[in-house]
Amino acid sequence: MVDKLAKKSQRSGLKLVAFQLLLVLIIALVLTVFSSAKSGYSALAGGITFWLPNLIFVLMAFAHAGARQTKKVVRGFYAGEAIKLLLTVLLFVVFLKYGSLSLIAFYISFSLLVVSQWLSPFFFYNNDGIKHV
Image (cartoon, rainbow, N blue to C red; front, side, top):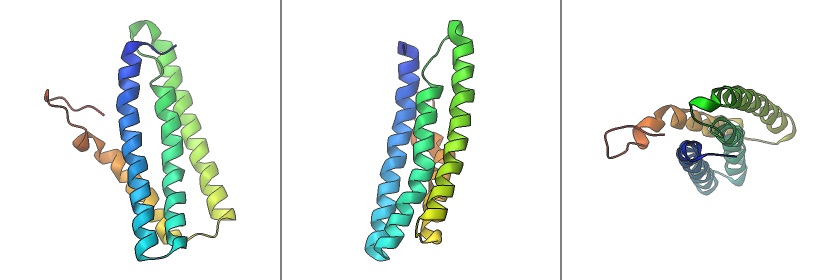
């Protein structure tokens, strides 16, 4: 069961994941309109390769919170990160081996999502002077 503190953290993580999904859709739309449908599909595949594992990590890592649940918090982070890494590799293999992709669009989308993760503290700045993700 997810407690109130964990829900607050999970909600913050889900804001970032929602922002990243919007970013993926915008990149795919722009590339579809200005390049080709193949580029749009490739950008979507590249974005999903980053976004889906990140979503699973957020759900697992922020499922528990508090001093009494330290072991569950640590276990959630480790399990979430392990699943995120394995799923990312799996999606890379599936999309690159079986998909007919524009590699440039695929890697641009994936890379922009990685950068969005790094820059997220600048986008999610709260009015109380504390940065929240």
